[in-house]
Image (cartoon, rainbow, N blue to C red):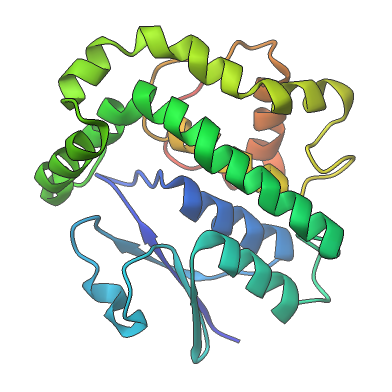
Length: 230
């Protein structure tokens, strides 16, 4: 077995992609180690072999998988004797629902708050490409989004309401212990932590308490990643 993970990276040692963090936590959960290959936003040549441009890409010997959800399903099926990420068809379907909630509500709300900070943490070679692509996506300059971000913080916090309500009742989204649904939301929180110094969640928020528990998992693997402490 030889695992290689192609993941996005920013300036210095910052690696903030929420989708890559989902996979990194999934690998750690399974007790697997992969060689991590950093990639720039503007250069997808390292994954040319996959004939597509989505990152992360996981290579397992002579087999490759792209897309964080597909990778999680692959790890679950290829390594059934390791701790489960999805724990059966019902859990897999429910986890997929949580993934869509995060992608379609949490990420868009968070992006309007931190996108300028993310840009500041991109690799110098990527800054022009990132700025142009994101301004086209949002229909606004990164500077104007940054200036207006305080008006979007409450919307971001409200987007966490279903997760907050769940974490008021149980320690993890998956119950008594974490699994891939937890790592799906955690990726968004790690995206913020690894790119923005802005404290986005109150210390007594159940989501903040939960996030800190995940930062400490696997001997503090995610907590050791360069980022901001709040």
